[in-house]
Image 1 (cartoon, rainbow, N blue to C red):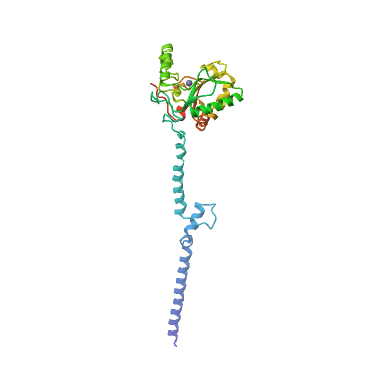
Image 2: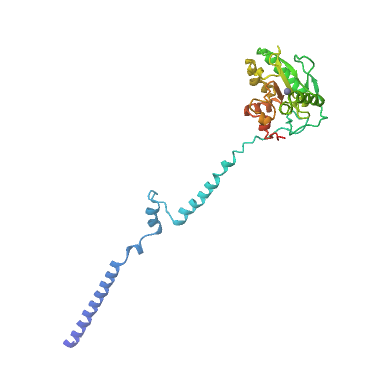
Length: 287
Ligand SMILES: [Zn+2]
């Protein structure tokens, strides 16, 4: 091989080495400046630290699951809260018949009268001291006789002032009171024809055996009256026209007047502290 040919061979070899080195350097430069983020991070790794710093490392957080449950839960809680505001409708459920004339729970007042011809079919004489024979419906009479015995056992001595009154008796009484006391007074006594509990045979005016405070509010000033308030409902009787309730019942305070409604209903009304008009949400419509 001559020198000329050798020189050409060395030149090609050196150039080739230089080209290879240049290419290698370029490749090194490109690798060194390439952004690391493009290669390594996954969505889970990048969201976890910012979206949930306290989350365990093995929990993968993605955009969708993190936001969707919250978005659906919040409205659910918001729609659940208004429900309690509907509760305050604390109207007691009426579980008895307050409309039928023969029902022991018949609500009667000037807004809900009975037919003038109405007469209970099961009236009987009550075996309790009274100035003349007094009548009540069978069930009410039985209950009152039991209460009378219990009262005597507790040194509370009662008598009946008035029990059942017919429509004609009611009418006569009403006209009498109106003549003597005037219409304004008569409007608030429980003698309205066809609108009195006495015509139902389910009401009684009670008095002390000695006649003190008969049909007078002073009957309630006796310590024995408290026994009636505390125990009458156990026998199905309620104090029907309490003090400071005449604007509701349209009947003046009449502590002597008791109404039979059955022991179960009497307990409910007694415990409620309400009148029948309030308990059944049937206010008297003023004339
Ligand atoms: Zn009465």
